[in-house]
Image (cartoon, rainbow, N blue to C red; front, side, top):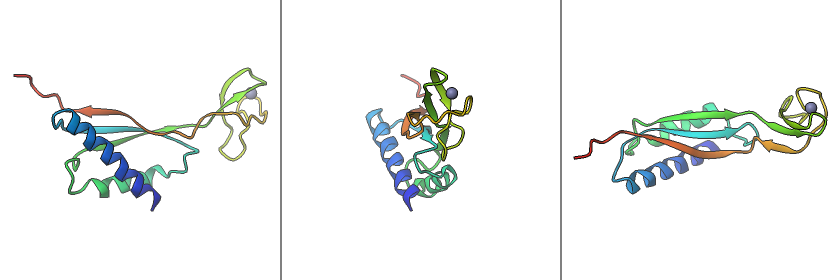
Amino acid sequence: MHELSIAMSIIDIAQEYSHEHDGAVILAIHVKVGRMAGIVTDALRSAFEMAREDTSLCDTKLVIEDLPVMLDCRECGCEQPADSIQSLCCSECGTLSPNITQGYELEVFAMEIEEVEQV
Ligand SMILES: [Zn+2]
């Protein structure tokens, strides 16, 4: 299962982050997942819930930001959302625009950590 290995690498990144920040408690991990990344977000969410068990992240939430596919449309002269991930046509004017500007993302872009009182 592809999503499980992704969930495990997200956990690795978060644990490393926690170590680098004096064992900070991570409340939530924010990830960006493009529609073209080949990831089923529901599967990633349940894989994460499985993978976080027995780790220091057992209470950490996974927040998935689902990014639509964006195309650089020559007809409109700007970036537009795709009609569908199969067609790669501009949703505004319908022109085939194979120049994908967004949609392949798979990245951890933010972590929420618990505020620790400084003594
Ligand atoms: Zn267009």
